Image (cartoon, rainbow, N blue to C red):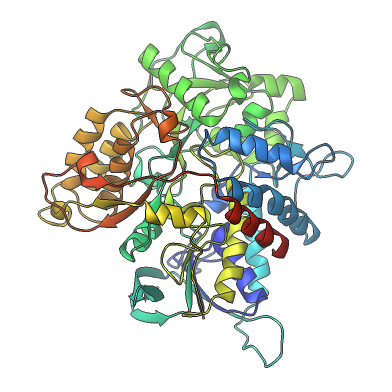
Amino acid sequence: MILVVGSGVAGLSAALAAVREGGDVLLVTAGALGGQGSADGSGPRLLGNTPLAQGGIAAAIGAADRVADHLQDTVAAGAGLTQLDAAEVLVVEGARRMRELLDAGFAADRDAAGGVALGLEAAHGRERIVHAGGDRTGAVLHAHLASRLGGLMPERARRAGAPGGSLEVREGATVEALTVEFGAVVGATVRDARGRVSTVRADAVVLATGGYASLYPMSSNHPSARGAGVMLGARAGAVLADLEFVQFHPTVLVEGLGAPADVRTGARADVRADVRTDARADLRSLLISEAVRGAGAVLRDARGARFMLGRHPRAELAPRDVVSLEVHRALERDDAREVWLDATPVERSGGRGALRRRFPGISRALAARGIDWARDPVPVAPAAHYTMGGIASDAWGRSSVPGLFAAGEVAATGVHGANRLASNSLLEGLVFGARAGVAAAAYRPGGGAWIGDDGALAGLIRAAERCALAADLERGATASEAEIGRAVGSALGIERSGAGLARADRVFRRGAGDAARLASVVGAAAALRTESRGAHLRADFPGSDPAQARRRGVRVIEAAPSSASGRERCAGGAVSLRAPASATSHRAAEQRSA
């Protein structure tokens, strides 16, 4: 039996693929698969980031596009750390998966001629972004996959000789721990919607639980995205990787700010309310999709100047790390809490109602807050959006622990390198979720070598740094989750420093639970990388160091003297990114068989 944990794009793709391969699947999700819950509102609700995704799915399916071009853009955004074999799988299989989705009836937006409408987003060399429902791509994709999965229910027993496996779904259930026996994952402890705890035995476990961006006080993510799956893997002995790389989306609504009379001329209104800082706020911050800038919106500072001009050849369509950093610097320069996203050029060029037609969800959300973005600019600032780090895994989702697979944002395949290319995340879930499902269905405990010795994952495992968590993280905790969140936002934001990381570490030590533990390990990883690269920027090490153009693996050890911190708590080596020739040959064989 295969246990799949999570019901976002990666989890649903893994479950569908595993059943198709003949596996018997138990899908456990903290929310409701369909999102409706019980009639009185007391049941599980739709959770996670997939339904919230406004951006589209990047895929080289246009007549003038090539997978090689998509690969080039992906590698360029990754700032020298992109795992090349994983990126090749993403773009090659991604185009195939996108065509399969369309053939299966996925309701992509269409152009006037009836073809799939392809949009442009930051750091892409051409239009290749598939949207659905305007700015509701994630919700439409989730509903499509959930409907396909729902067609396999109620659970059907696999008949002798019949194709396909079986499926059971448990909604409102959470995994509290993975079961490890003789160095392999063999199941999990599951708490159901009524609070009952049981042990589930499984041949393989696929974690598809998302990332940890909601550790930050301002985040575009669902509040549940706090790294629970990463810590499940860490406690089971899995090597983690790339934890220091956190992507910030540059245009997230700053709540409670009034639009200026005319920011385009430099006039400015008074700030009416503070930005919320509670790390466990009930509502996520409203993201303003990158597609808005792709359609022609521009960024202006407090004086009304387009500050991205001259900062990058592509101005507002520069890679996210570049735009977020320039927004951050504009805020610091002007002592402000917001810059202004001016979308009025989109309305002017497309005619009255263009923004409402193209971005209906954003338009409704802004209107509910009293903002008419067809007339006024929108106050925005960067917010934590996507975490490149997670459970180190290969292109088939295999972690360092036999029987444990990871897919989607919880995994760290290296496909994004140091900075994710826009709209590659839903694609990642589709591609690597399906691959993890196929591999999990084929896995037989004790059936031979788990991973080879010459691939990138094997290298990460060999060179993994031992990172010890301070023992006092669970003793006499005095730091609240809000205090931990503020320390994360301050020290692990767009620009970091050794001094700031050390101060935050002292706060993390006074916390308890997974938030403090994960924040502590992320902080240690950021302290170890003494350079600036991609989404990791060090004010005290502003340049990139060629000697550090490699990924780092971390193995968490749950014991350490409380005096140790930062670099003192983690020691070890790092691994080069390029696979040797034998691994390249193996990669080619894998792609042919996929």
